[in-house]
Structure formats: structure tokens, C-alpha cells
Length: 193
Image 1: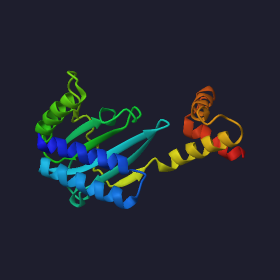
Image 2: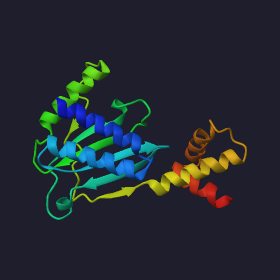
Image 3: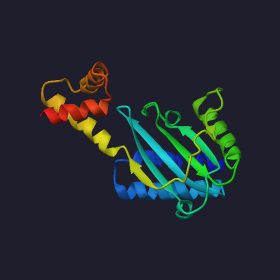
Image 4: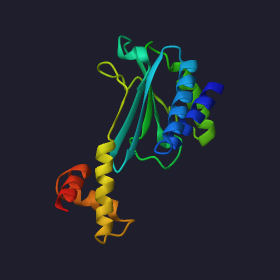
């Protein structure tokens, strides 16, 4: 149970540090990986997805040997909404391991710890083996350019008279009305300037 509490603490630190000081984020990621590795012997990587304006920004960090040969045979998904109400739908962390069933005990500990912390009787809170990759996983970051385009388009809308609290909603509404994604609509708005 202590490992579940420590893991949740390091996960929260990692999430809070995202977008802040890169050194803090790297240290939080290192601390979280140490906890993951201690909790699950065949831990081989994680994927943190932060969704904003319906755009998933995905940070994938794998152990060095995962890129070469170790297949992923187990996963554990934790929706970030369980850690706080500020996370959009789709924000999650997924842990990967090389041994089937590697996360069963940790999932039970996390479910119990989260149920107590949230005062919830709803279970399960974590999802096992629903996020197994088709091939090998690689470290990397994706989605940043798309999110940056949307944020720049929102800034442009505000500069041209849209109310700051309504610009994002307006962008999404206009995108839907024009049959495109928010990122596609943002690109069109940016190219019109």
C-alpha cells in the first residue's frame, strides 16, 4: 500500500511539473520511474497523456532496453481525473511492463488507496491491459505543435475582439460548424492573418 501512495505522490508531482521548469519535470519523471520500477519488476515504460482543447499531448518514456527487444505484455491505465478535477477527458497515465499480470497487485493497491482518498465505492478505478501497444514503444513527445496552433489561434481571436473566457469555446464551435477538428480550424484561422 505504501508503494501505491508513493506512486500517486510522484505522479501528482510529475503532472504538476509539466510545463514548468524542465529540470523539475525531469526529476519528477526520474522519481516516478524509480517508484514504478520498485513496484513492478518488469516495468518498461510509461505514457502520460495530457489533453487540452481536445488535443492529446503525449509524453512516452521507456527504459533503455525496451527500444531493443522487450515486448510489452501488461499495462495499467489511471485516468488523471481521479487525481484532480482540472484534467480534461482523455488525460491519463499508462504504465507498461514486460510480464503478463505484472500490475494486478499494484492495481488492487491503487484502487483501494484511491477509493479511500476519494470516498468512493465505485471500482475499478484503474484499467488493466487495455493499452497494450501493437509494436514496440519508443520514448518521445507528440501533440505539442497541434496544441500550440490552437493556443495561438485562441490568442488571435482574443486580439480581434473575442472575450478571453469564450474564445476557446468559439473556436471549437466554429470548427464543428465547418466540419473540421479544432486544430484544422486553428490552422485556417492562423493562415488568414
